[in-house]
Every structure is written in C-alpha cells, then in structure tokens.
Image (cartoon, rainbow, N blue to C red; front, top):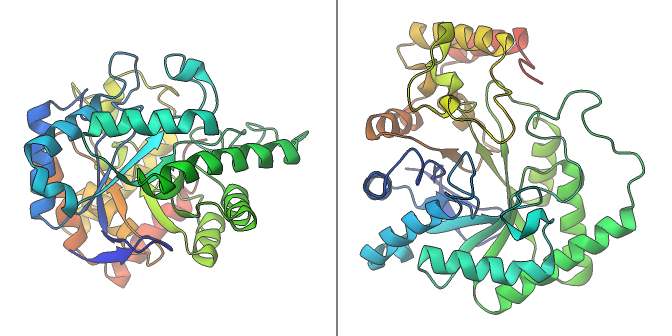
Length: 351
C-alpha cells in the first residue's frame, strides 16, 4: 500500500480510503467489522464516514454507520491509533438533522460531540463539511441553468464561513478534531475557506472530497488546480459512479439489494442512456486488458498524481477484494488511450 500526505496536515494516508456509507443499510455490523479488519490488514489506514450515513439517508438510519464503526473501535481499542478516521457534518435539507438548517458554528460542537459518542472515540482525525451552505454545482446540478449565482451576498456568505471556522476552531482547541476538510465544493469555496482561515487565524482546510469518475470528471482541471496550488488533498468519492461503472446495471439489470434499487435523496440521476453507453465502452476496454470494469475505473482514478486517496466502498467482501486489487494494477499507455477515446465520446454522460 502506498501512502501520501493529506494536504497541509502532518497525516500520511493510504492511497485507498475505505468508504462506509453502506454500513447500517446494505451491510450489517458483522459485515462492517469484517470489512474494517480486512482493510487494515491490507494497509488501509484511512476510513471515511458521516453523521448522515447510512445511504440513502433516512431518519431511521441516521448515525448508524458511525455507530457500527464505534462498535468496532470498542471491540478493537488498539486499532484506533492505527486509523485516520474522517467524518462529516451534514448541511441543510434533512428535516431530522437540526431542522434542515444550514451548517452553523453554533451547531458544530454538539454535532462533533454526537459523532464522538457514536464513534466511541475521543477525537476525530478529519472533520469535514458535507456540502456547502450556498448554492453549489454538484450532484445533478452541473448543467446550464441548474444553479443561479446571481444576487449572492458575498459579505453574508463570508461571515457565515468565518462563524463555521470559529466553531471548528473551538473543537480543534478542545482536542476533539485534529484537522478540517471540505466536501462537494468548488474552486471558489476552496479559495474562500483558505483565505478566510488565513485572515482570521482559524483552522485551515486540508482536504476536499468531491465526486470524480469516468462518468463525472468535471473537477479536472479547475478544482484540482485549486487543490494543488493551496496544498489541499483531493479525495475522489464515488469513483465507480454510484456503482454503474462496475457494469452491473448494463442491459437494464437491477441487482437485488444494489444501491440503485433503493430510492436516493437526489433521485437516480445517473441512470441515463449516455451513462450506459459510456459504461459499455469502458467494459469493452476492461475486457481487452483482462481486468474487471470496476478495476479499470479505479486504476484510472488512482493513476493521477493529484489524487491523494480514492474513496471506495463495497457491499460484500468479494467486491471489496476485487476493488482493492485495482490499486495494484498499472494502466499501459495503450490502455489509457483506449479509455481516453471513450471519455472523449462521452465526456458528460449525465447532467
């Protein structure tokens, strides 16, 4: 396993991060513990979760994923120091989480304390803002006209960011958080947080996790440029495009218990004809080079030196083992050219 510095922090994280949002919905406690044990055995030291999980989010499963991880930590206390544990505070929009209100400094300390209780630990290595308070061009909102940037009150937005940073600062000084990060942000958001943290001597964002895959590559080059120039670690989530890049949904298939068989918070916006055409193209390339479609997609993501750690998840041990094997693969120049040909044909397969 290779390791890389997490942005401007002093933490070294594995190039693979175990995502856990299936724990508590598609995976039982026994499944979760088995995955966590196996990940550590394979050299993964980076685990990502969120207060909102399991996914799709519901009131009934809120906090379940953190609880499962906490139960594992309680059963394996010596392993806590061997992992870099990341979680997130949810933003506005969910009625059962802080009455659907936006992230505010006054809520952060309680949210951190609740996560610490569920995780059964006394510190969080990386605490992230799950999505911005402002309108943002992510999920299925990156096509023309989906987001309106006019009439923005910049002073108000900056004041809100400072208040959030102050809440994080209190938790850092109390020893509850080591470092802070962003998620589902844009270059503008990255720059604002970096500059305001400098101006007010508040915690610096060391990482960002955004969606990035063969069917969603819009972060290159603008978000990745902002990360490189500000020493912010780039952590791709959903490198398999919500599972579609595995090929399991080709030809109208809908495997029982798969993520697409559950109703998602934003709807199944990836289930579009262009996506399936792109996946068929990538599956043909994978077959040519004797790898699975999932392995092709993950190896492609891992090949970029500006990627710090790729967040993967699995609903079964065979799936986890298949996905981890991708990080031992190297793509030849010919394979990269074949992948690029499909990507150029389907650069924006869903919007």
